[in-house]
Image (cartoon, rainbow, N blue to C red; front, side):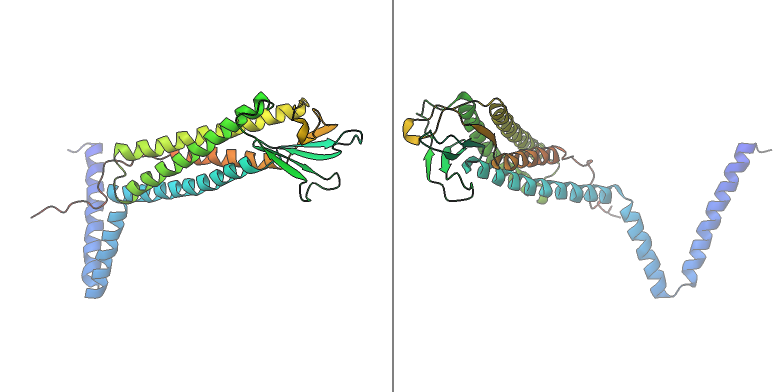
Length: 270
């Protein structure tokens, strides 16, 4: 006598055998071309479910993510370099006609430019570049200079490491520890660069909101404090640069090593 469990197992085995027999009869009734197509499609389906195919798919998806991170890093680095050279971090309005310079002044991290009082988009009257020997610069500008310069250098170094890491990915060295270390270091550098830019932006915003003044030399014809000041158009560019650098760093750190499986499994020798 069979138990209920044994009867159930026997029924399942009969169903499997029946399905296999149906498949064999179906293949026998096909033409040679149809039989070959059926065998080919079955082999393709088995290959797509194999661990090797899954590893190859993971490789392609992760590599595409890293390429997107490289593009974002490049754009963010270009924006960070651009905001360094612009002067519109702070806009000073001098409305008092008794001052030597009634007009506009744009205070940047590396230079200051003066404009006519009519339009900020006109040609500047004069621009004065800072040097490291200038003692009149406030602490926030001095620190922001170093932060922006460090962010640009870190972004450039991160791009170099990412190129090296992507090269190793596409030549089949994705499972090496060196590849993961290169991409992880690139992500850390990008995040650090983005954080440096954000610190410079926040400090500049704090100085504008507190209406802090700058003791420029008398030859600049700029007063210690303006009648009013506001955030310049360079700040949104710097914020975008910081955001892109942070985003690229997160994309790069998300790199995952695939399981140790071969994309094309070896065929056993008979």
